[in-house]
Every structure is written in structure tokens, then in C-alpha cells.
Image (cartoon, rainbow, N blue to C red; front, side, top):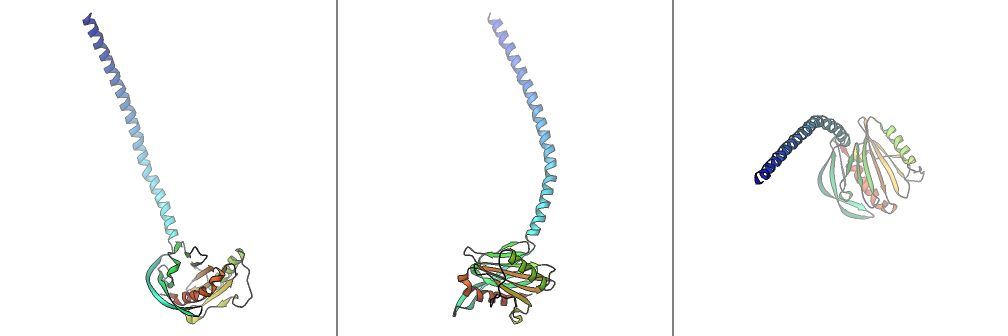
Length: 226
């Protein structure tokens, strides 16, 4: 009886071993199939990633087509509202076009997108510099006037709001400037530089007019082509 029982146990053990071996073989086959699929997928991925990388590089080139270098900080004396004030300004250099200028440190870090540099603040003050390629001064001014009209500004014939020339003695450049609106104040300055146009647009609350006038004058005077 015991011998029969041991024999049955031995047979059961052999059957289980064979079953486990079969399962292992199947698992190995499944694993091999999975690995083969992963290898095939890995072969395809680099090419896809390469294409995506090339596409991203094109976007990055477009996003950084205007390169700006932030230089040293210095202190200037500015007369605002009848009083001389010490103002910290930062020297900037648009290396792409060889244009240098200064702007108040208070405007913070500029945002650069394509051919436009923007200095936004949380208090309603905003200054942007933009290069319009292959455009003369007349064309740039016409486009700016259309842009402001599209944004809801109407041309004013009040004194100080009319289109006028910028003083050549400020920076040696021929330019035009015009002021729009009261709520908020807005306007532009445009210069013809070689075959391109440098356009500066600005916006500020009316209560900041007394301070922005001298600031924009200093900005104009600081512009020079290197």
C-alpha cells in the first residue's frame, strides 16, 4: 500500500514538473516575442525622435531670431517733474542687428519672441522694440498707424499727438513718433536703419505721463548703431 502511494506521489511530481517546464517554455516564447517587438519599436523610435527634434530646432531658431545681450548697469541723472533723480539703467545690445540702447532697470527682464523684445510690467507700463525687415520708414509708420487704429485708437490732432519727426541730434537717426489715446497712453517711435525699420511701441497709464516723457527721451538718445 505504501509503495503504491509513493508511486502515485512520484507520478504526480513528474507530471507537475513537466507542466511547469511547458509553462516556462511558453513564457520564454512570449518573452522572446515581446522582446522582439520592443527591439523593432526601438529601431523605429530614433528616426521619429530625430524628425521631432529637427522640427523643434526650427521653432527654436525662429523664436530666437533676435538675440539680445544684457550688459552692465549704470546710474544716470534724469530730470522728472522738475527734479533731478538718480535712475539705474541697463545697457542692452541687439547683437543680431548691432543696435545698442539703455532702459530703466525697473522694467525687469525682457521677453524675446521672434524679432520683438517686450518689457511688460504689472502696473500697465509696457515697452516693445521690434525689427521690421526690408521696410523703409514710410512703410513702417503706415503699418503702425493701421495697427493702432485696429486696436481702437483714433488719431488725434491735439498738440503733441500729431505725427512728427524725432530730433536727429538725439542719436543721428531719422525717425518718426506719434502719440495716441489717454486711457491708456500709447504710441510709437520708428527709425530707418539700413534696409530695416526699428519700431518702438509703448503704453502707460495717463498718471505716468510726466515720468514716461523723460524716460522715452532718454531711450531715444541712448540708441546707436554699432
